[in-house]
Amino acid sequence: MGGRIRTTAAKAPGKSELLERLTALEKERDDTRAELEHERQSKAKLQGELEDARKRNPPAASPPADLASLGPPPDDPLAGTAYAHRVMMISLYDAAKDDTISSRERRKELRTIAAAAAKLVPRSRVHKAEQIVLGNKAELEIKAREQRTAKLEKRPRPHGQEPKQ
Image 1 (cartoon, one colour):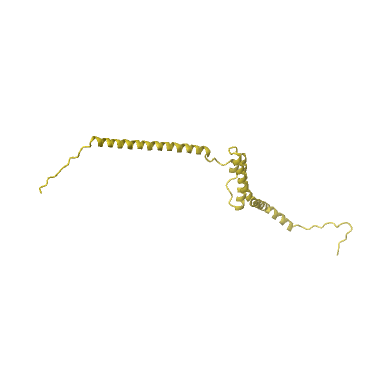
Image 2: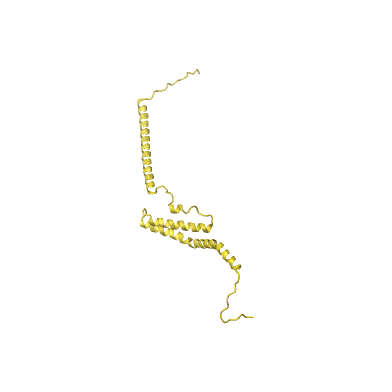
């Protein structure tokens, strides 16, 4: 078995094979272009939606001066409810004078804030009463001390009465 080694020379692709490859590459190129165009359109659409959203919802502004003047909320729970009530009253006023919202939205906003603020009224009044009591505590203690150490003075007797013995 004397073997002959067979060698096959690689055949050069024929004209039809080259045309098929060229057609496939052109199709792939056209598909890629279509995908890129679709991505460009999607990106432009998203950018337009983002701009619309920015116009509808401008970036958050700093709080109004009257809210900022309240300072940070207190740590005491009763004082915190009074603070929250003041914040709501300022917000209620701001909503009432806001000309960027429709009257329907304004009424809804005012009702919502008023309902929430109404729940805090009893607690804020308790805080106010507590502050009055605490504020007058020193004054009340001074008056009580004065009453305990008051000196009795003799008063003149009414006319015609004699002292009893």
